[in-house]
Length: 191
Image 1: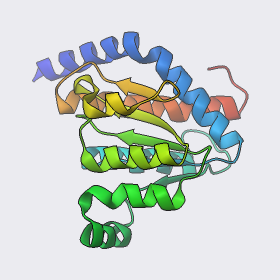
Image 2 (image 1 turned 180 degrees about the horizontal axis):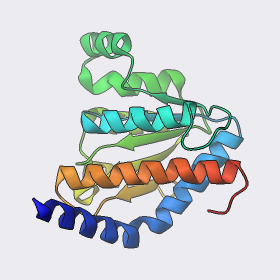
Image 3 (image 1 turned 60 degrees about the vertical axis):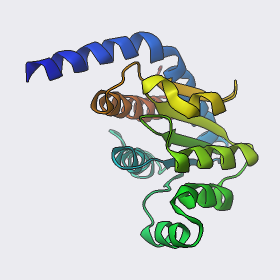
Image 4 (image 1 turned 90 degrees about the horizontal axis):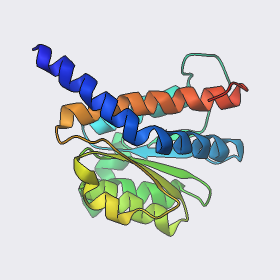
């Protein structure tokens, strides 16, 4: 059982080396979007859906300090939309339709997929691209198909590991770091 802790620590250390710079860029991008009246849309499946929902809850509610609510929508939380779109258009369209309906130029899509190969997340990215939105992708396992969809203006936070549990552990640290960084910039603290 102790090997889980050791492996998690090793993955966090490797992620620190590889992801510190793009993480800082993600924080600045998120802050700039929110400061310019943009919003954050987030999506994922399974554990990644829980991460997307958790991230948006921290933005709309608060992270560790009181502040004004921030504009964010978790696309995997409205069961009526998800079941209606899933029934009428297929499960692969559940996020794409919402991005097309809600996303605007200047907004950000936070796309979470441990494998980088989730068809519905990929289609959300494609819809965001059509709406001239920036994408922050959280992946692992080399980034999968999502890695090939991202442009130079997007940010890819790809955890250097192949096990889903390790990737999800680092994704939560990344999302918390983004929340903390946004709050720091909002409240005038250094990053």
